[in-house]
Image (cartoon, rainbow, N blue to C red; front, side, top):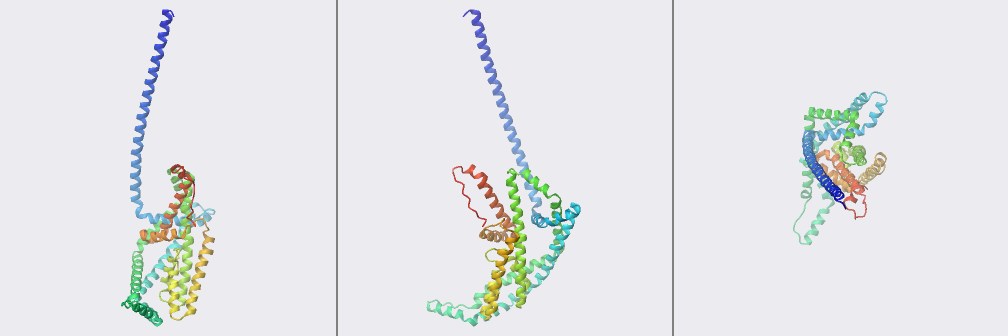
Length: 402
């Protein structure tokens, strides 16, 4: 190779080597810039996320005192939606919302105030009966005529147990429970009637929620869809199950409880028993529980009449209970609600009991809704996310909705 050719070759090699290092330096600088931008962007994102969580926490504190009002407003909106849709075909949406809110006021508020007034009087009557031991004395007299406890005491004596039981000792907890329940219901009813202005204020707040849910409910729902990181199909499933369970609780269980409570109260009135309205209200609430139901009131009543040798009346009460419960549970509710919100009775039972324990009276609504949220999220996990978390585990879904 000549000197000139060697020079050209060396120059080419030198230029290529220099270009290679320039390329590496350029890409190293770009990679560093990208890493710096990535770290900066992550820092900005986490700062934004912290501010966003703080804003959610503060907003939650603002609306926490009105959670019950908002939930009731959303539930009532779904119940009265057919009325609004019917009126909206003839008048403007704003006027349809106003008319529907007036119907809600007439259907919900006026009967509630009327019922609370009667309930306070009968609850006070129940407390007085329990305090004066009127009913317990009658029951003790009936039970003593059976001489069942004398036989039990004889058996205990033969077994070497010297403790002698009496009906007075055994029924004293029942009398105390009657006093507690009666006085508690009386206090609650008196508190509501003495704070009627507060009740009216909160009810009109709920009507405001209902009005704007009729007008802009679809916008709120779409906003939640856009805000949620879940797929739209999952968001729609959550909203759909929420609406279905809320409707089932207030329409299915509510109307079912109203039917059973009204029928039970009328039966108590027909038999001449004390406080028929109060016992009707109690049976209406007990009807929400899928396992015990109104049997917790009617079965002891039937046993009481059987012990009094009123066999026909006792058997009639048991037949009345069986026909009423079977008709509501297996004929009325399936026709009104269907099987879309089927849930295992044990889950419903503890959801309502736990809801009452934690949230008070609103727990009748909150408990099933929380259980529905858990079951729906479980369905989403099994269908979409279990394969990501447990890829080797075979898909096997156990249905707890029936």
